[in-house]
Image (cartoon, rainbow, N blue to C red; front, side):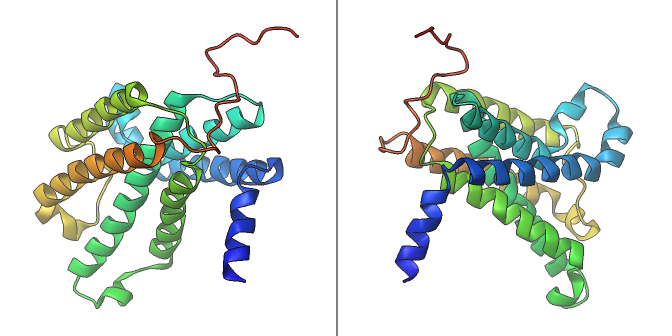
Length: 218
């Protein structure tokens, strides 16, 4: 029974109604994510804002991936960016929430507020989406290399210039450990999607033309 339910769920992933559902959820979540960062964006107020809202930028990329699928196209670079950043920042946010709560004086569960649980569920959903949809992705080493350069540059700017997402107060005494964890998670995310996406799979959307290709009239 469980196996049948799981196979049924997997079959939904490529149905248009499910793609539209995820598109709407991710679109609304992206808007909320940028709103969540509004004060930090205002305080920085420069071109560096491009590197500040990590999670909503990741969900925005995945929203675009879904939209591209809905119009019967594909974008390997968008797929690579969405996969790596969705997983990385999904796991990163959950880790920071629980690490910050653990370092606070109240017991762990008492330190967690309802917003922490909301963010935990939504960010785990981000990471899980990246893994689920990796079966369809068509990116290669070139796209992964570009995403690796962006991701590691983002890490350097975050912790070199101090534009990382605002953390719980209890984490600022451990900023070097947070930076090391973040960089390590970048490499884990890149390695994970190298393993998940580079091997061939029948589900990969090779039949769809790339956004960079011209569609010929039939």
